[in-house]
Amino acid sequence: MNTVQLIPIMPRSGIYLSAHGHGDDGRFARLFKETWLALPLSARRRLLRHWWHDKRRGIGGFWGTPTTTSPTIELLSGWFRTESALWEALDGMPDEEPPFAQTFGGGHTLRFWSTAVDQMPDDLVRRLIAHELAHVHQFACGRLRVDCEADAGQLACCWGYSGEPIREWADRRRKKPCRYERQGNSKSEII
Ligand SMILES: [Zn+2]
Image 1 (cartoon, helix red, strand yellow):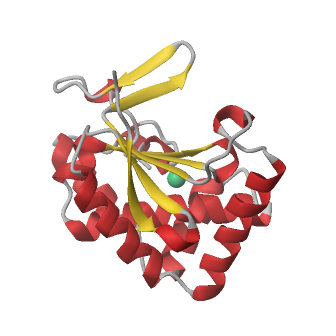
Image 2 (spheres, protein in one colour; image 1 turned 180 degrees about the horizontal axis):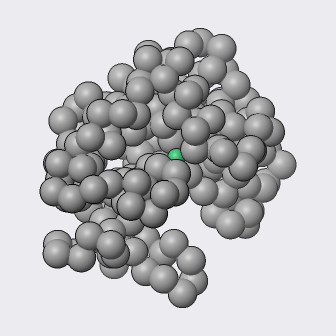
């Protein structure tokens, strides 16, 4: 049976890491806390209000199902992207890899891919966390635009966390052109 432990990130604010043991949960929780504390106070308050408000109303869980825990933050080796497609972290199958992170369920569930996170230096993990928190901020502000990836990237950049080094790292890791460039798409394939 899979036992999930809660590792405190900001316990007084109700922020914990649901530790599944798929990666270095302790390190990730520490980096999440560092990133969180570096955000502007106004942004932190807005995110907390969003998480707490929807939690009281009992909405906003994964795929909009009721939840009693918000946010849910996880470091996972893979997850279902849709009901028909399983993203698994398998070496040699780069096109089948999950994105490095995704924010689901109205900004209440944040998932990070343990394989990539464990390979990234601390600085990149902080940038990745900031990018996902920027997505939560979009939900909190009702700012869900078509170009939400560019918008999130811009906001994270304002917080001091440009996403460019992550994309450069992804290029080096895969030793081939970045997926978003090959597909002429946004960086949403990566983060
Ligand atoms: Zn994104």
